[in-house]
Length: 312
Image 1 (tube, rainbow, N blue to C red):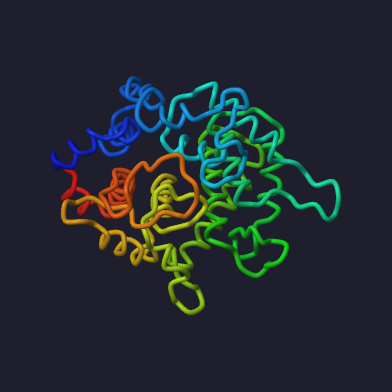
Image 2 (image 1 turned 30 degrees about the horizontal axis):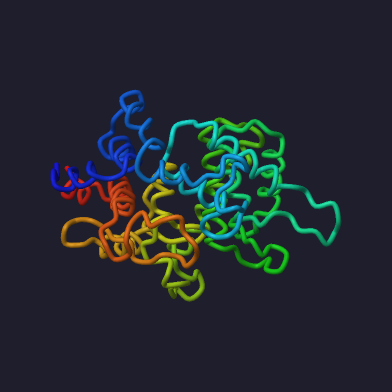
């Protein structure tokens, strides 16, 4: 095992330590109770929770905006840390559902943006919210899947081609829905997920399916937090998390990820998406525990020999 890399991880935030032990060292969840309990008590998790307005149950004095300090984006940051169940996170998640989701009553009123639908589903299912409105969100998501099997927030205006950004946000929400044993329309959901994976693979994760050119260079850059913006590391980490089998069409993206590795066998943060933040978890251009963890999870699944050389 690469003791230097492991030692570096173990000096990091409790949320990273927990996920390294769970995902790279294969500890059983029952062995990690104490590690997980620390996530909201110290480090980044505590820092986020200390910024919560307990009277309004919000962060940043807003529900979806201002980006990136609003309640929605703070909860996304927190939940990606995998904290234990916490009543404050539950209360804020329930508030999001109350404030964000509703079915339009008039023709000119819009449904909720599909990217936000994916985020809302992800957050509410994480806290295991039992609410009939989650079924309404599922109905809307399934109804708005495009013929090419992805989704696009601009479904009212662009009916010809899905967006990788929207699709990954929807898929993350559907994964959390399945992981927490929600059953409404489950067979249709699983079918739609398989189809949408094909949509992403058809694009080799970041290329035009028509020209083969890179859709957006930012999709090849390593970001964390990802916010709503799709990139290849986010996609590959999602794929490994759902057990997607290796496909040759992943290869180009995997090679790009490998090319980002620094000499010390870590991966950096290469870009951050402009906006307000509560605080910087990690510096742009420097080694990132988050991106290194995520890259290693991907390699463990799809490039086991390389992973073994780096970490075992």
